[in-house]
Image (cartoon, rainbow, N blue to C red; front, side, top):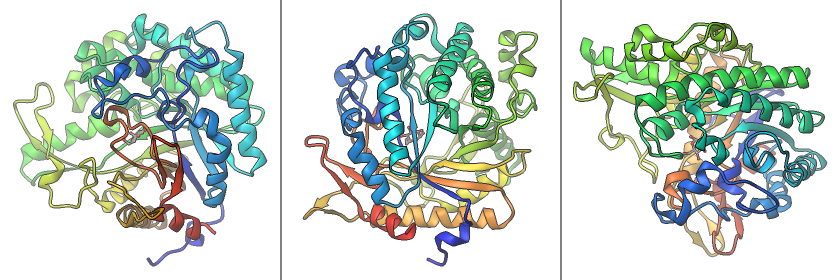
Length: 443
Ligand code: BGC
């Protein structure tokens, strides 16, 4: 390794991330209402290893020790999300004081230990009751989200100054409303297209509420991105790559920046127009303090006429001759550099990498987890972050996904992303070798 922490500069934010449903457990404790993920993972039927998130990492009870671990790892910033149904069990209206108290305890615990909390408002655990009213497909979600953002910022904004409105709208609309692969398990363009518009609108509306209630807040939103290249220089593959790029990268960032939806490059998106109300093109914009960029892999696209509307598809990672993680994603650090360069072309004030990390089959041997592959992944991706930063892209931080192994959505507990190992039977944590490296690096 040829770089050190100081190469990133004094102001660079080093962090680690988790999300509420993936770690908290306590799914029906202290007045929490059900979320779409409680329903989707019920009895584990749709989860690859038959598990669910009822207990997960039991972070709800173990947060003091987990925050101690963050401290021990020399990590200064902790990104976690709020569970909407823990705060507003009915989606709107009645506030669950026990939920507010819980997050107050977590926030205060961080602050006492000198760790800066970064709150994500929405990391996919929508109150079930709102889904029953149509969820992200219906316009009512915008007012519900505004109310939720208002409650959160009024209760926590005195102490929390770093906010992320949403986590990866691309993933939860695409997998949850187009392909039915994630909660709430809906599919088809008729669900997906309105969900995209309402999620985009909520990013800006939520951010405006935060700005109003916490004038000194640092406000961002996190977008999943993957650099797309064509399978060859043949015009049909170049065209395919352009369309995949719209879907994966441009769709959720450009409207926020006032560039409208990229309909010209992916005409099926025209269907979004029927959901756009007269003032929406203005309401959809927000001048974010930073954009959270989340990257794990890149994509190679090719022309494929069998895929309706898109006429394009992406090559399976296993065909690319690149190393793979345990969940079959490619390891291609240069993809991080390329996507940072691409996003660096937008008029964005600052980029913070709010997620990056890898899953591997870790084993505990004599109380130790030797995860050299993950360590290597983090080191090589980080090197590419620095490369982009040195090229002049304003990158303000890097956060590892994830603090600890947790409930990896549809994959259940099979995909371990942590730099801390979780034993899901005993809840014992062990800092993996990758975590020990982070600790040393950040010392
Ligand atoms: C999500 C995380 C998830 C991770 C690995 C991101 O898309 O924000 O919740 O665990 O990727 O799949």
